[in-house]
Length: 108
Image (cartoon, rainbow, N blue to C red; front, side, top):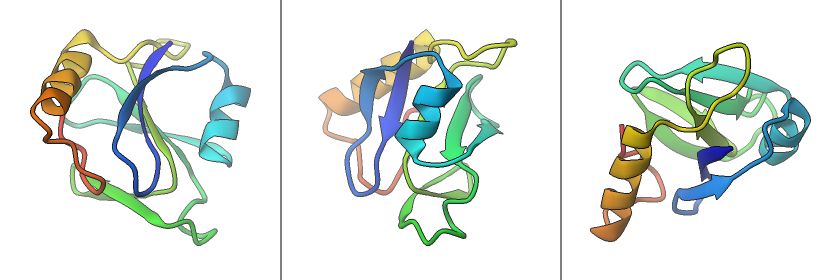
């Protein structure tokens, strides 16, 4: 599944990830929480206990602060889906222009 993943202190990257809850739990290192985007049609997958566990701040997205690794996928339709083509296109454009930052989410 195509997703955009952002680890703490690193630039976001376009990745292919397994479409399983087990794999995503391993990637975010904790129990999953699905946070719907208010701007894009997809969802952010995060460790729901990241802040309580003391994981470092990752970035702000749509006025929300996220801690630990975050994964952006497409909409939930009974299963996870690929990040939308619009989000991937914006991500690639931002990457090409060097506009990706380590503390912000810019493609939505």
